[in-house]
Image (cartoon, rainbow, N blue to C red):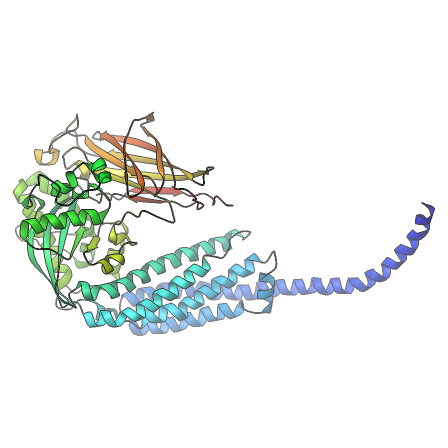
Amino acid sequence: MKSLVRQWPMRRGTLRPLLRRALPAVAVFVCLCLLAAGWLGFTGWQAHGQLTAAVTLARDLGRQLLDGENEQAERTLADLQRRTGAARRATDDLVWTTVGHLPAGGNPTAVREIAVATDELANQVLPALVSLDPAALMPVGGRFPLDGLRAAAPTLAAADEAATRIRDRFAGVSVDGLLRPLRNAVRDLRTELDRLVTLTDAAHRAAALLPALLGADGDRTYLLAFQNPAELRATGGMLGAFVVVRARAGRVDIIDQGTASDLKVYDEPVLPLSREMRGLYRDLPGIFPADVNLTPHFPTAALLYREMYRRQSGRTVDGVLTTDPVALSHLLRVIGPVAVPGFPTLTAKTAVSALLSEAYLTMKPAEQDRFFAASTVAVFRAIWERPIRLRPLAMAIRDVVAERRLLFWSAREDEQAQLVDTPLGGVLPEREDVPTVGVFLNDGSGAKLGYYLSNRAELTVGACVMDGRRELSLRVSISSRAPRSGLPRSVLGLALADDPYAARTLVYVFSPAGGAVRQVWVDGAETPIGSGVERRRQVAIVAVDVPPGGSRLIEVSLLTGKKTTTGAARLWLTPGVTPWTTHISSAPRCDQ
C-alpha cells in the first residue's frame, strides 16, 4: 500500500503532459465538429430552399404536360433541373458523405437521398414525359393515332424503368432516428414516387398495348358490359346492357348491342366450373348471365359472359370490358352532358340517379333496358367523337380504375399477362407481398336496393403469432337509406328478405392469400358462417338483412398467410353506388 501511495504523485505528474498534448487535438476535433455542423446547417438550409421550390415547379410541370402547354413545360423543366441540381450539389461534399456514415448521421443521409432522388427524377424521368405531345396521342375524328402511340412506347418504357429504379432505391432509406419533419419528408416522397411509378407504368403499358388492341394489326372485337350496382355483384353489379364494338386501324364502331335478358339461361354451365367455385356459388355463374360475376375474379366472369354471348350470337369476341354508371358520371365531368335519344339527357350530376333510381321509378322493365343500352352507346360515342382535354380525362380514368369501375380481360395471353397485376385486370391474386382482405357483396334480395346502401370498412393489423402469421381485425358496416314504403315492384324485385324493403346482402370475406378466417360476429354476436375457398383464400359468407334507415355491423378475425413480416395490409372492396369509407391501421414489421 505504501509503495502505491509513493507512486501516485509520479503517475499524476506523467498525466499532465499527456493532457497538455491531448487538449489541442480535442479542441481541434470539437472545432471541426462545430464547423461540420455549421456547414451541414448552411448547406442543408440551401438544399431545403431549392427542394421546396422544386416541389412547386413539379406540380406546375404536371399540369402543363396534361394541358398540352409544351413550351411552358420545357421552361419549367429547365428551372426544376437547376433547383434539384443545386440541392444535390449542396449535399454532395465530403462533410455530408463523412457525417452520413457515422452512427448518428442518419439525418444527413436522408436529406442527401431526398436531393439525389428528386434530381434523378428531374433528369431521367421528366424529360421523357416533356418530349411527348399529348395532342398526338388523343383521338381525332373518332380515330386513335396509332403511329403516335407506338412512337411514344420506347420513351415511356425508359421513363418507367428509371422511375421504378429511383423508387426502389429510395425505399431503402431508413427513417429510424429521424426528426419528425425529416421522417415525414421521406414518407411523403415515397408516396409521391409510388404515385409516379403507377402513372409511368400505366402509360408505358397503355402505349405498348393500345395499338394492337385498337386494331393496328387486324380487327378486334370487344364485349362492353354495363354493371348495375343497384343489384350488387362481387365485381360491382349485375351485368345488364352491353354493346359489341369493332376496332379497326384505330377506329372503334358499335356492331351489336343488347341486354343480359337477351342472352339465354342455360341448363348446365357454359364452361366447366371448379369444385371451389361450385362450393361457393353452385352452378349459378355458368348458367345465368346475371350471375357470372358472383365471383370477384374478373377473368372467370369475363370468360363465362363471352361464352354466353358466343352461343347467342355466333361471334367470339377478343376481350371483355365492364363499367358502371358511376364511372360514366366521372367521364361526363370531362365530356359534358350527353343527349340520349328518347330519354333524359345525362350529366355528371344526374347520371347515377337517372340510371339507377329514376329509371326504375318511372319506366317499365323493357324501357329500362333500352335506356341503359342507349345511354351506353351515347356516352361511348361522345368519348370518341368529342374533343377532350387530356388532364381532366386522365384524372377521371385514374379515379375510375382506382375504384375498380373499369375492368378488362383479353383473350390474348401476352396481353392478359400485362393486366394481371393492375386494378384494370380485376385478377384476385393467389400470392401477394402485402396481405389483402377482400370484402365482396352480392345481392340476396333479388331487388335493386343496392342503390340505397353505403358501406364502411376498417382493417387493423394485429399481433405476430408463432407460425409467422399475423392477426387481422376487420369491421364492416352496411347502412341503408331506403324508404319504408312507396317503391315499385321493379325495385323490390323478388323481395327475398322478410321485409321487402330490407336489402338482403351476402357478404363474402376473403382472407389474405394462404390465410384464414377465424371468427365472425354480427352486431356483436358470434355467428355461424358458410365457408369455402377460392384462389388460395378462405372465404366466409354472412347474410345480413339491412333494414331501411338501419345498419348492420360485421366483425371478422383473420390470419394472414405464413411468413408474413410486413405490418401493412390492403382492402379490396366491391365498388358500390356510394364510395366506401375505409381506414387501415398498420403496425411495425414482425422482425423489428
